[in-house]
Length: 65
Image (cartoon, rainbow, N blue to C red; front, side, top):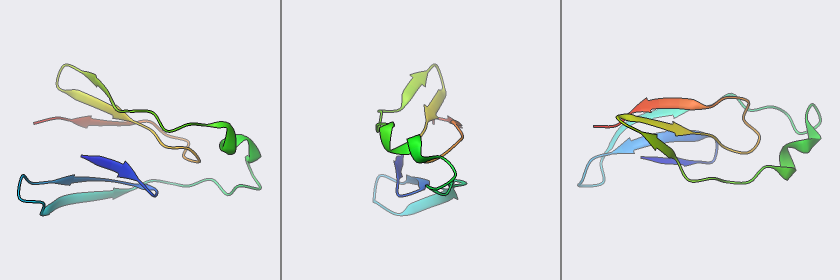
């Protein structure tokens, strides 16, 4: 899995894209504090993976396989 540029995507071992999920972005003028956010590595808890990105108002919860 990878999270970047407003999307989260999953790939096979061969590098083929399995799926892509686009995140809802908040315009910078609506929340200028987004610049203070940092990229963090995914948080893995059991079979769940939690991901977030600067400028996004959601934490994605994914199932790892």
